[in-house]
Image 1 (cartoon, one colour):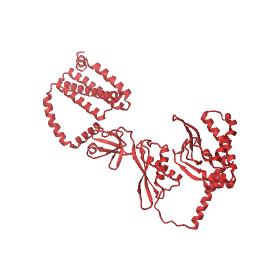
Image 2 (cartoon, one colour; image 1 turned 30 degrees about the vertical axis):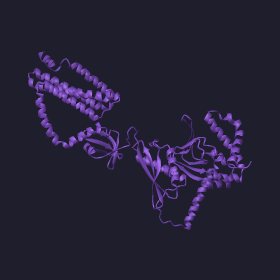
Image 3 (cartoon, one colour; image 1 turned 135 degrees about the vertical axis):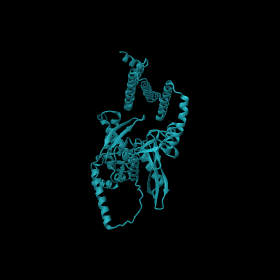
Image 4 (cartoon, one colour; image 1 turned 30 degrees about the horizontal axis):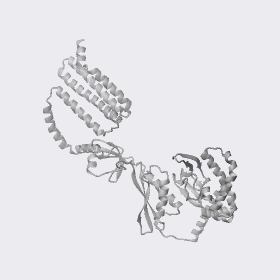
Length: 513
């Protein structure tokens, strides 16, 4: 009985139970709030209980009369238990408390304070054991000097890591570029910094290398959101006026909804050079908000540039080679043109607006339709726009028709598919666009402009009266959608509306009564 009394008395003191309760409390807190740190927390608590087991064994050795072994094991176990407690408190303070008050010190800062606490605890226990700390410090100074000389590179990396984090040169999540390699910083360790590239490569940079050489932190600017300027180059013939090219491209990109492209600063196009080969070199500059999809976003910008230039009748410049014109080529091109006209004619036959026209009149329109492609996210027409008087016929893709309220609220009216058309009121009356239309996918359209339709009206003015009723119906449908009222409520106004639209058409095209 005295044996077990001696065991318990030696290893279980008055502070043991409160300490055990504190450790269990810290464990449950960390286990609940730090899910990603659970493996480390389990290991720390397991280490603590191993030290408690060591204390128990030291008590058994003491009861057996092995005093020297009991004292050594007891002291080692106490130091180990203290290390575990310090580690858990470090997690509580640096991973829970400080983030709650909006403080997020670098991970190395946590390690430094925890290591200082380890050393202080170790020195306290040595002093408690009766060792002279002065002689220990003097001896350790010599040993430190030898170790520092032998580990210059390692210490350089460690100090470099401290400097990088303490002065916020880089942070986890930053994108950096070293020479020709760019990637995202995922961890800053004592000796090295880990950078993940877009090619699923993890590059390990020694911290001393980053401190000795220059590197770029991409997309970071003081008091500004993270965004990185990108350049997309393209060439256009010198015959195209530079202001027109710039206006066409800028309008297309700025009005489009392109993921990861910043709206402020706005994308801008600049004339960078003029080549003696006959073309001008332009650059579309935009700001990327997510630095991961750089090439895919560049590709979308290029696609918007291509489609906007095609709609404007401007061609990208290419190096010219020998061109041979033969009669066979002319026949082939003529056959291709006739096939395209037949396709356009077939499309026009399905549009009610032109149902009263003769085959010859439809063929005339088919000859004068212009191909107008739009990239996904392009704004095809904008609500309230007054300068555009074209009608669009959708031949591929989908487009959204929506209204924008004064408070910025957006309301979808319809989704257009192949064969649908829009812009007829702007074409026939010159009225401002009543709704906005945006490409939901890559879209291909035929565009009919005022000049082409005017020839038909002047040849047969009665067409204006025939299409005015259909415009009145479509106007009533749009008004019903705007006001959330039943279409039948507007039936009695159709005749009056049709007459007003007819008068507007005649004024717009300068037709006699």
